[in-house]
Amino acid sequence: MTALTAFPHGFLWGASTAGHQIEGGNINSDWWHKEQSTPGMELSLDACDSYHRFEEDVALLADAGLDSYRFSLEWSRIEPIPGHISRAALHHYRRVIDACLARHVTPVVTLQHFTTPHWFAEAGGWAAPEAEERFVRYVTATTSILEGVEWVATMNEPNMQAAIMTAMARMVAGADGEWISPTVEREMSEEERHRASRNVIAYADPEIGRRLVGIHHAAREVLRDRTDAKVGWTIAAGALTAAPGGEEKLLEVRYGKEDVFWEGSRGDDWAGVQAYSSQQVDEHGPVPHVAHPDSTLVGTPYRPDSLEIAVRHAAEMTGGVPLLITENGIATADDAQRIRYTREALEGLHAAIADGIDVRGYLHWSLLDNYEWGHWAPTFGLIAVDRETFVRTPKPSLAWLGEVAHRNALD
Ligand code: BGC
Image 1 (cartoon, rainbow, N blue to C red):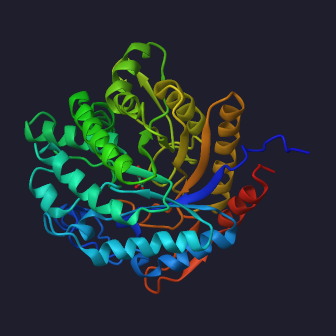
Image 2: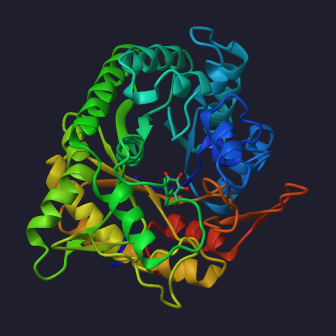
């Protein structure tokens, strides 16, 4: 008998991480420098020391019953100096891939997850005319270690990266005053919060988006020429909905924030959906979140239905490109809330799949409690990590998700 909530045969069940958030000592990256120069940011320092403890991380994931692991390569370790490739760093990442394969865990490899080499950022980052050539050179170097890897993402959340570029450009032009990062938790007035949400979340310039789409397509070509991997990228899905009267504004906001990137996924082998919460758009723009006892540790509302909203929108925008859920999760100190959230998100995902949407797997964010871009308090992990000893302690949610994976169905 097939359970009512069975997922498709061969569905991947896993968890995701990103290099800078877990490895530690990522000293050549732009973020390492940003952390030290931005007031209020906590430092990543040794992070979870996963650069040395990756075998234990993969073993914990596999022993719980999960069968796929998403992690990222650190460009700044592989190319610490422009044009000079570290073979030792490449060998390291090959060992991470091999640790997965040895345990029958499918690796899902992201080539760039928010961080870039410090030298790349200093030379203009993604806005520099040479950005595409520089990224393609790096991507070409990584192809030497990708044998046997089926899933490769060129970039993580190009739309977040584009939104940050837009906000920076507006700031430089004096349009928006002080820079407010949405990833740094601090007390914000209602007005500041509104401005942050407008700057960063709402108004990514579609021109910057198109530029990143071009860079992604150039990298895709190299990967298709030199590897057998299925190539895609992963997109931050806002699960935006219209408040009464906000229908037109929703289309405008969502185009710059997301749709230009979903359009860029057409022709890819897959697209990564990353959903956490949902937000309404009224005639002025995104409506700021209102604090609620159920709000997450990053201040967003508890909205497990965001996954289904995001998947349905991604399917519509990409026109049938297979989808992989590459991130979904909740920043909470209450693991029972994490299980409740994930169960509800999976129910919605199941409904979308039952309607014929092609989804190939679900990778939870995150395997570990990790460095949340400027702060340590928001815990997204299925596994707690002691920051002094690096001892890993699996939470009940890890075993719970492992059982779902084992059954390939919800209970
Ligand atoms: C990013 C992760 C981040 C997560 C939770 C996503 O935007 O890809 O790096 O930790 O959301 O905020």
